[in-house]
Amino acid sequence: MFGTTNRKVAVEYVNPNITQALLQRGLEVIDAVDIVEGARIIKSDDEIACIRWACAVAEHGIARIQESMGPGVTEVQLWGNLNYTNLANQGGWHEGRMLASGPRINPWLQEATQRVIEEEDLVGFDTDMVGPFGYFCDVSRTFYYGKD
Image 1 (cartoon, one colour):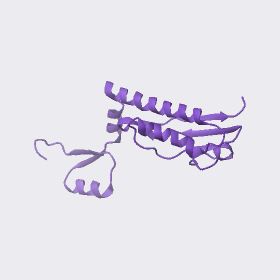
Image 2: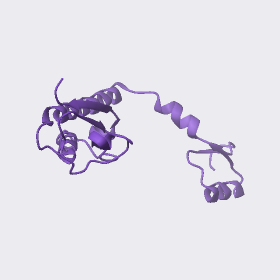
Image 3: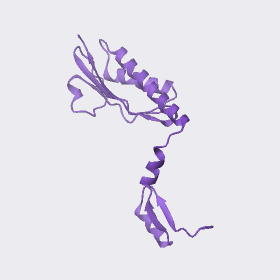
Image 4: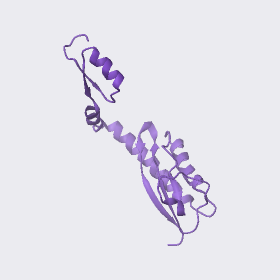
């Protein structure tokens, strides 16, 4: 190390091999998770604007899902509306295709299939999306399709 006598190094995700190598060089390894998490809670005005944009894109995709529910529509087609909306608005990708309907809604965490949405189905989904500028937006919703 040049210019300091401080022998501490903070590592966010400690790997045993890296830790041993650093210790062998006389460094003190400390866990950086708390340090990094503390820094992540500080948001600039630009970051807040990006978060708002990502959430607005998700909300727009959610509205498209709700508007698209109708006779003959499949789970995959509904989920595709969310994906398209995200991509069309400079978003990234989704952690999964979490959308299920009717008898498939429970247990949760089932991905969209070619199942056709039926009258009186519940349609549940989770956006799990990396939106514009890499900002994550995770919103869960359940809609009722049918007679009120």
